[in-house]
Length: 574
Image (cartoon, rainbow, N blue to C red):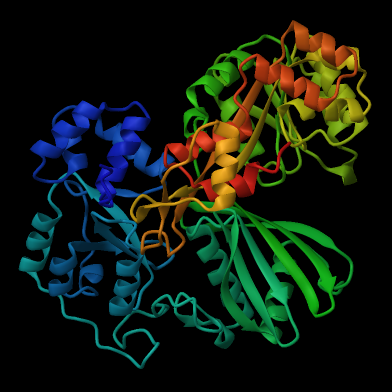
């Protein structure tokens, strides 16, 4: 019988540690039995896991900040904002303030968004949850509150911060109200503050893009979260215009030009956290529409394992990266994670493969040990000229941000043929068609056959939130797709029904679906003869390649995603 009980947060982290190879299932089961302070603390105290490893996994892979209760210094001003009975009832401990003014709170459930919202109501502050490790949270609560029980803040008018709260505090988050975000009515704020609040929320919420879309009498602000657009707030059109002008000034754009498309960029610091924003505007019938790409520079690179590659695909990919020369292609549509895969790949090579150089547009993340060149057409630097200059600088590995024209394609293939390992992204539907795309761009078939050693294609799918997962029957379309691909009857699959952890979406984060194709001698002969993408794909499957479709179905079997996500994102591929 399948256990339908939703796992706790610590159980979810424990499973991540098992899947990452940090601990075994037996160690996890033993820690569950012996724990009296918490599962994660038991793993550390019993010597099954180094605390540094736990912090690394939580902070960098899962993006969950942590606090060690043995060494934490508690700010009395923070303690005064949370009533003792509330702290004891919900096992939360205010520890201090972040540089943006938000209240930092230690908890065992850092993903409880409903509790975070309630605490915002109680304290009149934005709240930032951190995972408590290194001891019993209740012991710290006893120690702190027994010495000086803090008074509850005096309530202010409805929707306002408490009367005795420090200046600059924000009321509770309520994104459903028109004009409200962080619980603050943006329509009553100057454009400068409204822009700051929207950008801060985008970075904190890990949004990849901000959309500001005008209509006849209002403007919608939408965030792209886990690949899906979600409306966050509705603003007056006058505020939209002021905010657009403010952002254009920050991004170095012409505020007097409202019809022609423009591009710009700016960066902001949120405490120790730096974020870059790539801005694009275009005039519409209702005014300027603006889309802002959010690049959180504080995020650490994912490892190849964390990207979602299965063991077979990962083995083949690492074999390709170990080759001394040749071209390796990464393909997929815009927003499918190609750049992340390229960065994770070169990060594995940076310490033992000599001079690594890259030409990109834009440089999305600055990487230590890699010499990155920014395309700047105004200065005469495009992809072909950047590649040619790199060739004079004795590179071992070359990363090409995108192959999009004939000159770049030919220059990159030539680099691969002259003793360099070249990693490049290209737009195509699957691994086989990425090579055909090179031929379409003007690369001679015999050069492509000799130069290209492998290709990877990918898509991003949303991950099932295991806090609210339930067994569901697939739809008729999903069942048909599954049975067609897997050649076996369908059954029940896990799907999230929506909860506080996932903001009602049923999903939490994204993972990759991949197919990896290594080019063998038979395929080289086929490429030299000008073969079609479908014929090349058929040969790759005969060689043992796991297709995108099948890889997606396997992830659905493993409860990593849903059949609906797989059908929607990858099943249109021929």
